[in-house]
Image (cartoon, rainbow, N blue to C red; front, side, top):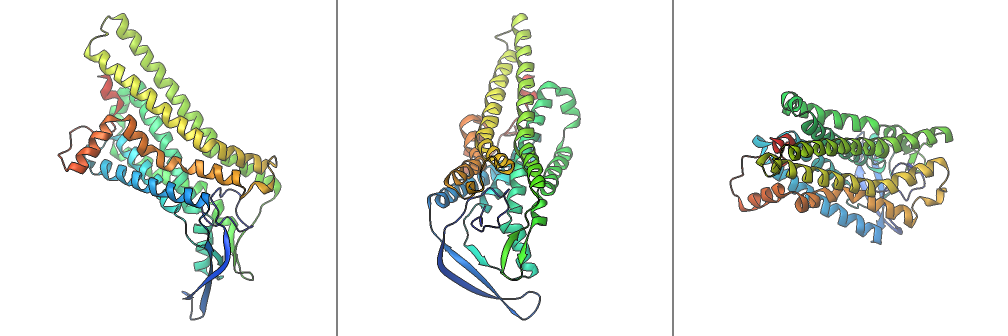
Length: 356
């Protein structure tokens, strides 16, 4: 996110930086702990290409994901598991987009608890990385949801309900917050310089942390989503073979099956592909950086900024994908803007309903 021009930036805060000018805007605030004044100094920013790209990504992400949130949860009585997870994905991407909005770069900061919170939460990008991680693992949860709906439909109907989905959503957010707690430990304030500083760990710790981030943010989610997608495709292919052997290829059941196979495979493949294309270059470069393969000059370089822009584009792509590839979502959007009565079906239908 913001603030990575400071040389004491955490290396895992793969975010977009701002050019600083020599113009200072000094704001005087009253200390929350006493009567002594606190002086905050802010740098003016230049609207470089990557700042403009960041702003465009943020605006598109806010508008698109807000639409998904309103449309999905506006039909709360009809929400099923997939709807709830898609709504949570939109919330995570919406928060990520909000946190991408450019704000003035802080130049000096007081050594108070207010300054410490700013360094850890905003400068250290704790909230942003929490929402990014929640977005990633919501995609994983959607993959499992669809896997059980297709491969084990009877167990899915029996055990998957709103209460379970509420627990899964809560677990995703708590787990995501815990996975990025390193930021809270390594980011603090310098009482002498009035700066946010990053306490650099040992080289061995940095290598292990780089591998951990690579596994958590890219390798594990990608393997899970591709594996579940493969099993879903195989299951639907077997059913198609049974339909054909029973000579009911023109029946209603076969028709529903054909729709299910086409939508599931194409939509899930597209979601996984976009996620990999957006995040893989950024996270691979970050891993190489921690391994020492990529030099320190990579940070804040044009390639670093470009890969960062591409990575965060993932937060605004999903609403566009739903609109282009999911007819039921387009219908729900039309009903929302026309204030028409909504249909009885959920927007993102449980997949077993397409197989019956």
